[in-house]
Image (cartoon, rainbow, N blue to C red; front, side):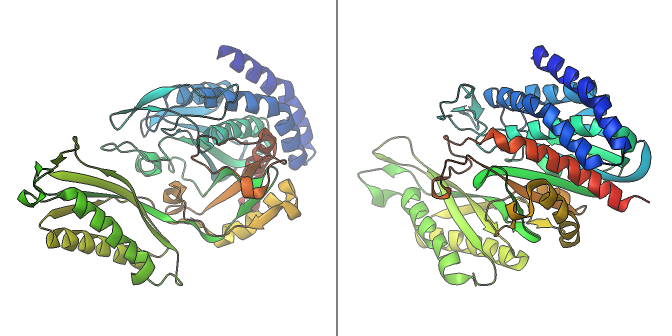
Length: 438
């Protein structure tokens, strides 16, 4: 790992003077381009290292240490241990001005990688009591490397920055393990947007939904609100040969699963806003001839409208309780706080769209459709104006209809997407500071 840092430091000092010289002429865009080119190979190396050594939510210790060491090497003010493993680097420009934050998420998923890449993960860990493979199946390794690259580039422009840049490396975007706190909500609670107070925040996400070298965003609601759903069905254990002697939580749970599907299909106005109720796990019993006393179901709820969300939550509780009661069982429903809608401030989106178009080319930037995926970046957006955008990571030779989705064990991205993403994050920070400097 230390070899990586020696290369990084050489890169910083090697192009730092060139950046300052270019910036002195007032051409910050050109300086950023030069910096992104200079750090491009290092960004790829960082990303491959992180990909090969993934860590689950709230367990990102080695990743956090790597990030902190790099930010310290740049001479930034660095704070670690925020929300367990979060890292924040503060770059104070030579001129007074606003504070802009750039955010990347660090955690991987409990997925066994099947990409066959030479740097594929072989890591295993424990998740909710189960032994699992660990993989960066959502691209967070890419986000971390891109932001490390942007920090490198912007540090070279310190003397020209009219304000402050806060680099936020966040753990547990995928959600903390059961029984733990974490993620963006805990980062905010521990003051990540304060001291100095953040005026605006930017973040990105990579996928194969677009080709490498493209970007898209959506003003206002871009990603859904999401909550975790848990239902515990309580019956009465009995011999499988005498079901009438007990109360079957498996049959009751199956009836609840079917009944819950009528919420979106029959009980809410989906012309108003999208909604999803998905049951994804169903566990109960230990032996083929024993009807157990309990069954446990988990799932996810996705909505865009606050009133609809409240209504759906109540319908889930009513349907689960009433269905269970009709079969002589009981059902306990738990719905967590989850995350709100990822809401891109429309004024901020309008102001910064030209930046994305300058970086990617106007023909390569589009308005995204709403998606039912969720992002806890939305928690920051509840506090300050934010813009969350998407970058394409699909290789040019892969047709759009063959795109591999995030969270797949086969997910990978084209490394050609990294350099323009570094430029995008750096330019968004510089342009925001310049537009809002006093």
